[in-house]
Amino acid sequence: MLVALQFITYLACAIFAGAALYVTLVEHPARMQCETRIAATQWAPSYRRGALMQAPLAMIVLLGGAVLWWMGAPIY
Image 1: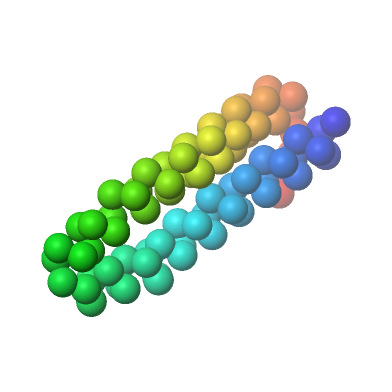
Image 2: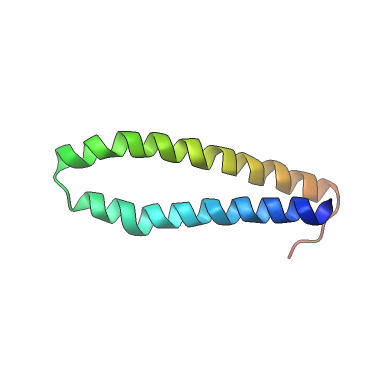
């Protein structure tokens, strides 16, 4: 069970970090090249969808990390 929880926690952390990196390196620079009206129109739905994806991932990482710490799991 410990190994499975570690895998799920690390996977959620990697997906969260990958999504954040994608937004930083790809989405934001692409929007900065658009005019303000277009960028603002695209930002709202994108932000909402990103929050729906990243908030649960952050909670999985937080809870998984806390449980792993409580169980005395080694940190790699």
